[in-house]
Length: 391
Image (tube, rainbow, N blue to C red):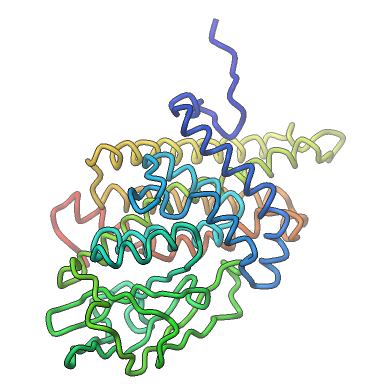
């Protein structure tokens, strides 16, 4: 006789059994925090197009910002635990995960990997505690998926760098005290730590979004900003390699994070059909509904297993950036499909803010696009398979 199922949905394959006690503790701690502190606010924040900034100190105290980085008072958690943190944050909202992902993977990581000892000591403890917020400036309005076409420049004049240009679609831009800005120099593209209080720095909040409304998205403008000579990240080699390595770290978190949104939508759909009575019986008893739920569970389980294996590869040092591209592309698409199906199952109720599936669905349209579009990641994987780059 087969063993009875003990794992609750949406963990259909009992993946929780493959986690360590510490990883389960991380999951439960973050889920409890988010449920208590953020979930009650996220619907109104989404409607009001604002990030719950009043919770940033508590998020800092939670110890998840830059959670997989070591030293300088940072947690140094294992890579699967970090992924689980991203999942639990996005179970609430993609905007919450984006805030933490940018802070850790796109701001703290480049300082940790490419900064001087002075830069690390000055910024990493503050960023880890949430006492300072950062943003990451790579994308430009005319570049999009081609960051090498950037027009932002940094010119060394005497003992100062003169920064000019602009960046677009910048998460945390209007919250940030520092920006990690990538600019063209005479040596090639390099990274800089740019304090946002300098003369010539302007951050303009982008409004009117139909997605990621509970996230701050900004345009950044640099008008002859004078930077100290040591503002450059000294270990950032010329070219895009270092900037793209930061995106690899963030995409890893996305591949895990979207599982949280998918799980939340799946749970909502399952609970809804069990309670909803139509045609003299629960909606859960209808064949079409069961078929949809079965397909959702299958896609979710595949994505969960892909993320877990990706975490194992990253922890062992065997992860390649194309592994991340496959997981980011697959898991974002799976989560978006699950959210859309859940919204469909909820019928008219699915468009109301009291339910979360449409909010997640709208958010995932952005996550499907940012930090490498679905098509770009398919081309990255295709190039790895064939040995011929189509980009």
